[in-house]
Image (cartoon, rainbow, N blue to C red; front, top):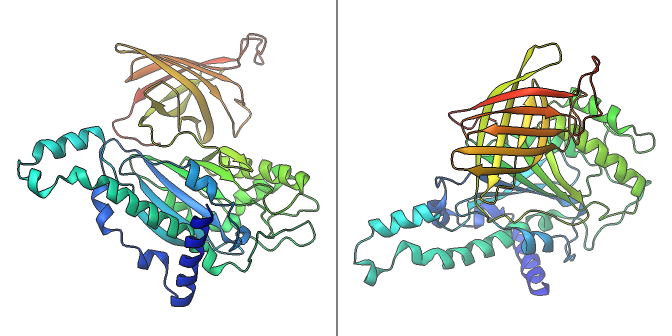
Amino acid sequence: MKRLLTSMVAAAGLLSVTGTSVAQIIKTNDLNRYCGQDGIQRQTVLYLDQGVIGKQDPLWYKDIVNKLRFLPGERIKVVTIKDGGSEVELAWESCYPGWTPQKAKEIKDSESSLTLFTGSALDAVKDDQKFFTNNFQRALAHPLAGSKYDDKPRFNLNNFPTKKLVEALYYDSKRLEYKDGVSRVIMFSDMIEKSELVSHSAMSPDTAAQKTAERFPMFLHHADFYIYGINYTHGESELNSKMELFWRDYLLHSGANIAHYGNQLVVPRGDEMFSVQSYTGHVVDGDGNKVIARMRLGYYNTGELTFSLLTVGDEILPIKGSIITSGQNLELNGTVTASTFEGFSKGDRVKLTGSSKELSGKIGAPDDRTVDKKGQQYLFDVSFSKDTNLSL
């Protein structure tokens, strides 16, 4: 790790001296051939908050290096949030070297016997992965070049610097759009917004989130956020709790789900293939009215759900759980993990059965004791039909 820090600091020094961005000095042409493979339905965007990064601090990036894994051909973007927030800079963009089993078979079948002498396109993957790793680590050095801190900074309620993370995400939200796929966001920051939007001394998270959503309405393309670095620069636990409530509320209303929020990076294994598809349908409310509903269903081969959510009207309900398949039959058992409205809440259950093309079932309270205004069990009929293309 010390050697990695030394190489990253050296890279930062090179950038500082030459005034050249990482994107300009790192070649990506050799890796472009891995982009756009069928079956790869995720991109990863890393946001690095320059305002909490010290040039000699070896701790902040080790979670990324040690825990983050990628799919073959997955697009990766490394983005620096400039000190103070509101401005971002793309440090590097590339695709991870590797072939899906299907693509590897196509390559092997298309190559002639001459590859015994010239080498196969499959042989270059390991070298390209080393090339990727070296350049990825140099991209992580990008915030160091402009950091004004030598060591990890420490703040308190009286000296937090101005930081406009809301504006940074607002103006960069289009980066999370990913056609026919989903976005995984890894964000290293202490998440201490300090701007006219948030008052640390008299903060009401719900009110602040609502006002922020009115002033900076954005759509984050139903991305999953994995945020770490909380408490990294200070020990203000009460402020941390309020900021977490603020961000969970604001980002959920902005079309994003915070899958993790904590000191260290906790992220599911990232190199396991999964499928994502979307559905359109309706929920029948207590008065018998049909309300438009949509669903994004992502799952691993094990059946565990990932990147899954429901929308009812404009409201968003991330869900976790699993699916069980038997031939053409499918059963989904899920739980709502967050909600933007009172109709459904965290802990409500989702149970659907049918096929991969048509699903129906119930959504509502997890037990029989919860009833609606008519005294009926708080469960509502829901049905879905699979979309032709991923649309959620």
